[in-house]
Amino acid sequence: MAKFLAGVLTGGILAVIVCVIIFFSFTRMRSAPEVEENSVLYLRLNGEIPERVAVDYPIPFFKSNDTLTITDIWGMLRKAAADSRIKAVILEPEDLSIGWGKMQELRTDIDEFRKSGKPVYAFLKTPTAREYYIACAANRIYLEPEDYLMLKGLRFQLMYFRGTLDKLGVTVDVEHDGKYKDYGDMFTRTNMSPETKEVLNSMLDGLYGDLVTGIANGRRKPADEIRATIDNGPFLSDQALKAGLVDRLRFEDQVYGELKTDLKLNDLKKVSGAVYAKVPASGLSGKPRVALIVAEGDISRGSPDSDGTDGIQSEAFDKVLRQVANDSGVKAAIVRIDSPGGEVTASDEIWRAMNDLNKKKPMIISMSDYAASGGYYMAMTGDPIVAYSGTITGSIGVVFGKPALHGLYDKLGLTEDEVSRGKFADIDSDYYPLSDAGKAKLKEGIDAEYKDFVRKVAAARHRRFEDIEPVAQGRAWLGSQAKNNGLVDEIGGLDRAIEMVKKKAGIGVGEKVQLVTYPPRRSIFELLFQQQSSDPDVQVEARLAKYLGAKTTGLRPWLHGGMLGVLPFRLEWK
Image 1: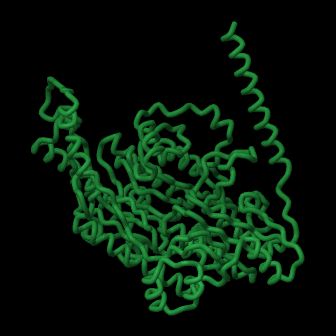
Image 2 (image 1 turned 90 degrees about the horizontal axis):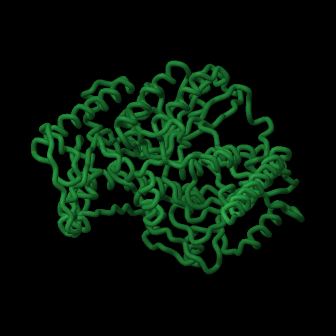
């Protein structure tokens, strides 16, 4: 009887939840948000800004319902520029966790909005170089009177686990092709290799130069003066004001008060980015449909029904590519890549599907923060590639790694015993390290995969193998460096990608297009009834990510095993 009552109660609760979801879904479908006259667009940028949001929550109190994508912000600022009801933008970036490519896209979007003649005010709260770099595109920068500007330069930091693994008795065998393909160094070294330092210093020079130039242009100061100023950071609020890094020290209500005075308005309404994103863009969208296919995250094999929340799973992503290829209503496609790579086999499967799409639709590749290793591999269709100067790309190389847990098992009193047939039956054993013969066997396969990677790049870039191989070697490049080396075609963002795909598809220069994102956002109903992944590696990575955060990103390809095309490092600039 108790079980029966519990079942009835559970069913009743679920029915209520479903009814609430249906109510809010219909409410939102029936009415678009209203924007009042004399409104200001309040754009709060916090944490990660994804290329796509997997789930569409119709329920107002769900925080994730406020998540904006890079494309949302891009479209929103263009819409606000043409909307007579929107008089200005208040920009509030805080605790951002995005790469340099997205930062450059946001600056470009703000610059484009300012061409409308409407002002942009940036209100900062303990900003770092990330937030300040973006804010420098604004007309005016505010900081609270008792705050800090954490502008002190840039640094890259990498974490190495060799010392910990030695204490545990664990060794990791790593084989790779390309002298810069040092992804496994985190397990086999305690510090950076000379090759890693060479690459990171080269990147740091480029990004620091862009930071200085961006601040100098925004603050209308010489670059040398900005370099000298940064050397005195970080800054208290009054120090930042005296150095000319901010314009005024005010609290938030004072910022809005000054904006009303500047605009000569008695009242000013505030509309959030999450609300304004749902306002129809009258006159800004055209009839020709252009697919924006988003590839975001680590590349691995996976279920054809994957929603993409676990990264780019080849079967699911290939399914999306086929859907676009077979849709006669889609005029052209932009593939937007934000990936550090992953499994070689999965990358190859996606590469084939990308080339099939290339045969059916005019296509452009747009690179976001990362399009490296497998993320670069999948882009080798021969189509033009657009990257930001700060995109991390290239890393044309292959790596294999596996742990040997014999020492750890000894410490725990565990033993393994086995019988086998075949010379290399234990080549993937997690108990024994690789033998010399096993290393030679693996190197044979890695060499073949590496040469195939370079050949694919050479064919797509219309170059000879001998031209590509010297700039391959597993080395990662900034987008600006990649362009100089012939690995990308143009420096730019979403606007440039749209211009190029319109020209390729024969769409008029002044003609508007309808940008349709693939895969589309899932509804909350799909989330509720989705079968959870049974892949134990996905579950392990999710648990580790919960406790260790972003440092576990990219773990699943290693857990799956096999040859990988993965960026040698994950960068955090501070």
